[in-house]
Image 1 (cartoon, rainbow over the protein chains, first blue to last red):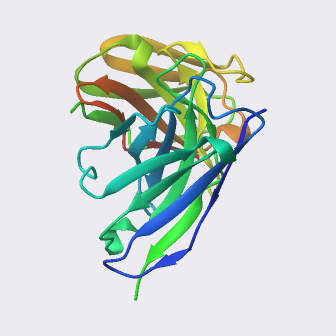
Image 2 (spheres, each protein chain N blue to C red; image 1 turned 30 degrees about the vertical axis):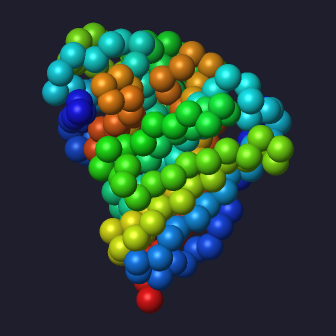
Length: 119
Length: 110
C-alpha cells in the first residue's frame, strides 16, 4: 500500500518561498507514475498545482507556473514543491498525491499539511 | 482550460434516499479523463470513480458514475450515514496538460 506524507514549515512569511516535501513509502517513486501537488484554500475547493515524473519531466498549472518548481529525489523516494513570492492567497492545505493505475485521476493522497502565509 | 460546474451546490437528503450529483464541462471531456472524489472534513479526498464510470478499489457498488461529452453524473443509490460529505468531479486536459476540479457539491443530512 502506497503512503504519502507531506512535511515542511507551517508558517511562511509574505514574499517568501513555500517549500514542502512528500515522502513516498510502500512503493517506488520510479514506478511510471506522475506525482503531484494539490492545494485547498480554507473552506474552498481543490486546485491542482503541478506534477512530476521520475525522469524529472514536469507540468504546472498555468496560473501558478511562474512561481512553482517541483523536483524529485529518487535516492530518497520523495518529491518536493517550491512556491515563490507567496501571499496570503497561498494559505491552504497542501496535498501530495499520485496518478492512479488507470491514469488521469489521483488514487493515493497524503493527509495534507496546512501552510499559512503571514508575517 | 475546461471549467467544470457542479450542481447543486448543496443537496439535502435523508439516509436511504437516492442522490444524483451533476458535473457539467465547458467543453467536451474525454470520458477516460473524468473522475469523482469524496471528501470528509479534515480528510484528503478519496477517489470514488475514474474513467467516468469505473469504481475505484474498495468503493461500494451503491456509487456509480455515468455520462459523456459535457455532462456527467455521480449517483449514490441508497445513502448511508457515512456518505454525507463533499463531492468533487475532476477532469484531465491535454492542452495544456493539467487537472481541474469542480467547485464541489455538499451532500448534507436532511
